[in-house]
Length: 204
Image (cartoon, rainbow, N blue to C red; front, side, top):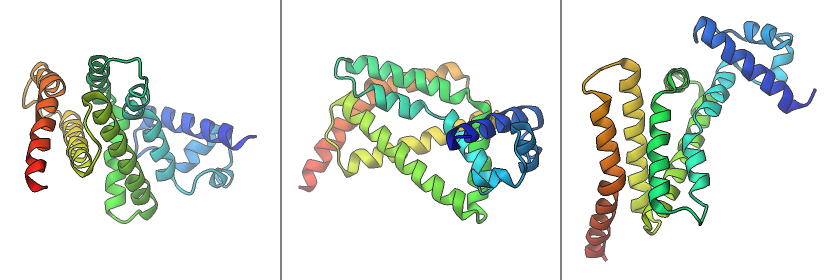
């Protein structure tokens, strides 16, 4: 069996068990049995349950990658890219299972799982780089330390909104947060990038 085929079977088995039994009820033994492997054989593909769960999460949270990829299409107008960002954010907030995995695994990283911690470092590097690339393409700004800083804050905002959605805080109706997101994408970010450009010029 090809390595990729084996991983796909394991990930599919993990998804099914997570849906049926939740994260805590998902075990390596259960994943192995569902995928048709012995528990020992699964270690040829993954070192731990958390590593499997990470890949399940990673596959499910592909909106940033998809938007960044399509934004490279030179035929696309900036307004079309901005609309795709808006729609991608709506999709992101609806991915309940993947979001729960993200925060479960983040907790594992914070309490000492170095393998998952390293994976998250690499993933945030990738997410932030892609968000920065989207900004450059959608708003015609020059890439630099400030675009990366804004991308970093944007990623933090996404994480925070996802967490509030998971916790069902209900602080405001989604209609209003969606409107604010739309204003940010269409008016807020363009003006903010102009402000940053003028402020940074003062430092030169």
